[in-house]
Length: 489
Ligand code: CS2
Picture 1: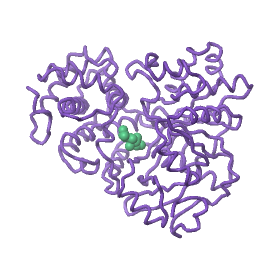
Picture 2: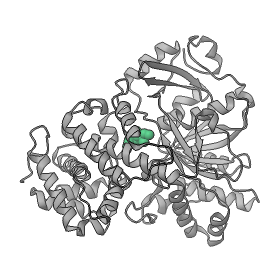
Picture 3: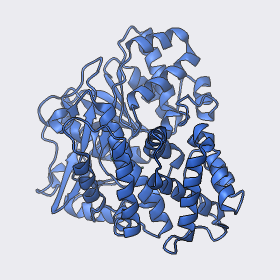
Picture 4: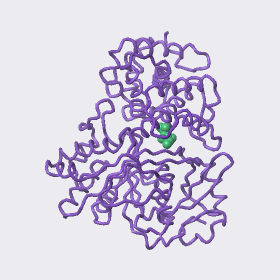
C-alpha cells in the first residue's frame, strides 16, 4: 500500500505524521530544486511551523531537471518520509509541508510553475539548485551569459527553464500586475549565497529590461543563509528499510543524519515563517557561518571524495577509516583555522570534532562518487578561497594543495578510463586538459590553466604551483593511492 493521505491510517504507530489539517494550508512558498536535501531540511523545519498551527506556509515543490520527484510524490499527495540517523538514534517521520508538486523538463510544467511564482499568494521563492544552477563563472562571479540554457531562456520568456529565467520573468509578471515581489531565498552551498543569487538574477534581468532590473535592485530581498545537513542519495536498501518502518510504501524516502543547521539572515519582504520552531536560527553573521561550513565541512568533504575515489573507498565513513586521509584532513582543518573567523560563541575545534563524528556516521552511505561531482563548482568556494587567503599572508598550504592534487588525479584517471564519465558542467574542458599529457608538470599546468576554476592568479603563482606539483607527484608515488598508470613523474 502506497503512502498517501487516504492511507495515513495504515501508517505504523511509531511514525510521526502531520498533526494539522493539510487541506487548510496556504501554499505561499515555491521551492525550486526538489531534491533530498530540501526535503530533509527546509521542508522539515516548515513542518514544525505548520505543526504549531501557523498554516500560512505550505510549500509548492518543483524539480528543475527531471519529472522523477513529481512522479514519485504526486500519487502520495506530496507526503514523504524522512528517517534521521544519529549515534543510537533513529526516527522516521512523514512530512506534509509540501502541499503541491510541480516540475520536470516539460514546457507545460514550466508554464505552470511560472504562473505559480507570479501569483499573489507566493511570498517566498526558495532554491536548492546546486552551485551550477546559478550559471556563474566561479572564478569571476559573472553570469555565464553565453551558456546555451541562459541564451534559451532569454529567447523564451513564456516557458523559462533555468531558475534565473523563472525568477526574472515571474518578477516581471508581478511588477506588471502591481504585486509586491517575493523574497528569493537561496539555500545553496555558496558563500554569500543571497548576494550571488542577487547578482545572477540582476545580470539576467539587465538583459531583459533595464526598468525591471532597477525594480529588482531596489525592492527584491535576497537573504543569505547557511544550510547544513548531510543527506546522501537514497539507496534501494534505504527504501526497503524505510518501507518496513512505515508499513506503507514510500516511492522516494529521505535518509539523513540527526544533525541539522539552518542560519538565516532575517530580511524578507512578504513575511516569513517562524522557522526557529524547527531549529533554525536568524543571525546577522551569515558570512562567518557560511565560510566556516563551506571550508571546514564541504572542503574536507571534497577532499575525502577525491582521495576516497583514488583509494577505493566507496563512502565517506569508509574513507574516514584510512589514516592517510584523516591525517590530510587534520592538516586541512588547521590550515582553515588559521584564516577562519568563527561566528560568535563557536569554538572551531569543537566544530571540527563534531564534523568527524558526523562523517563517521555508519548509517549514512554517503558515496564519495556523489560528492566528487561538479568539482569545477566546488573547488573555488571550498578550497581555493582559504588558499588565496593563506597565499595573501605568504603561508604555504600543503593540505589544500594535496586536496587540489587529488582532484587533478581524479580528473586524469577519469580521462584515461574507457567509458568513464566526469559529472561536471565543464567536463569536456576538464577531460581535454587532463588527457593532454602524461607528464606530471604538464598535467598540473594544463589543469591549472582552466580559468573558470583557478582564475588568472593561481596559475601565475610560482610558489603555489611548485607546492601543488610536489603534492601531485607525492600522491602518484604513494602505493595506497591508485592514480592513472600513465603519469610520468
Ligand atoms: C556535499 C554536500 O555533495 C557535496 O558536495 O559536500 O552536499 C554536503 O553533504 C552538505 O553540504 C552538508 O550540509
